[in-house]
Image 1 (cartoon, one colour):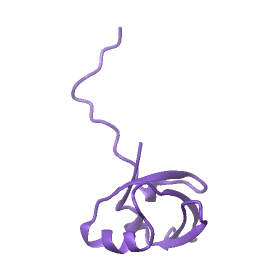
Image 2 (cartoon, helix red, strand yellow):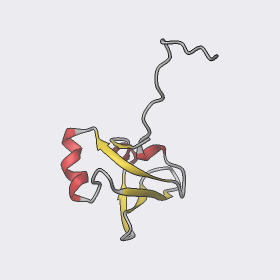
Image 3 (cartoon, helix red, strand yellow):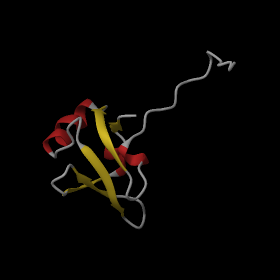
Length: 87
């Protein structure tokens, strides 16, 4: 029998900025209303598969490959942090 504490918080939802090189995930939602329209226009639509392609030497910007079309997008890490991934 396992005992779980009700005080434990669920794991924090992952963001695109948390991905490691070559790792992928599916976009769940966009959390910054001001940035959301810009990201939607660039193809960051909920349900889209995204893969971290590269990071600049100092960590910013990053490049992502979106969907099956091999569409490459470059974003600041602060912008990528507003894109949440499905569990």
